[in-house]
Structure formats: structure tokens, C-alpha cells
Image 1 (cartoon, one colour):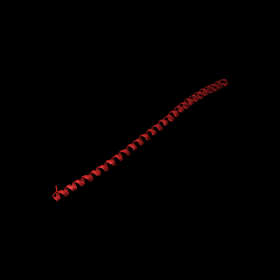
Image 2 (cartoon, one colour):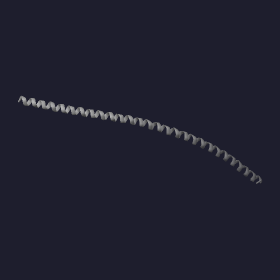
Image 3 (cartoon, one colour):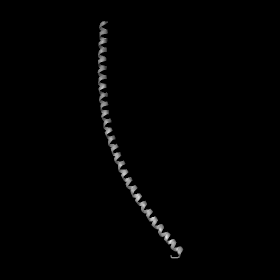
Image 4 (spheres, helix red, strand yellow):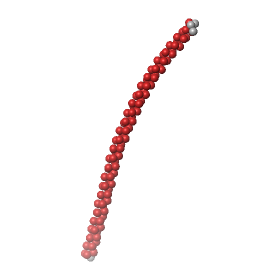
Length: 103
């Protein structure tokens, strides 16, 4: 019976060692996978930084373009206003001449 117990204990030890080795191998796989995932995440942050920089460039260009269009609109508005004043003066002069009978 002692021999059977010793055999059983030895079998259990062998099984425990096998399970421990499998656990170590699985832990190493998980660690490697984690390292790969960390590398992927870190590289995606670089892509995110690039996207942010591109976004800032686009926004900056859009602001410059918007400023140009605003200035052009203000210039055109001033021209229209000046032309409207000239036309109003011509119409007023014409009406005054009509009233005076000088048409």
C-alpha cells in the first residue's frame, strides 16, 4: 500500500509539474500577446497624433480662407454701398430736375 501511495503521489507530482509548465507557457503567450497589443496601441497613438496635426492644418487653412472671404465680402459690400449712394444721388438729382421742370 505504501508503494501505491508513493506511486500516486509521484503521479500527482508529475501531473502538477505538467500543469505548471502549461500555465507558464500560457502566461508567456499572454505576455507576448500583451506586448504586441501594447505596440499596436502605441503605434495607433502616433497615427492619432498625425490625424490631429492634419486636422489642425485643415482648420488653419479654413480659417485663412474664411478670413479672405470675409475681407472680400466687406470690400464688395463697401463698393455696393458706395454705388448705392451714387445711384441715390443721381435719382435724387433727376427727381429734383423733374420737379423744377428741367428734365
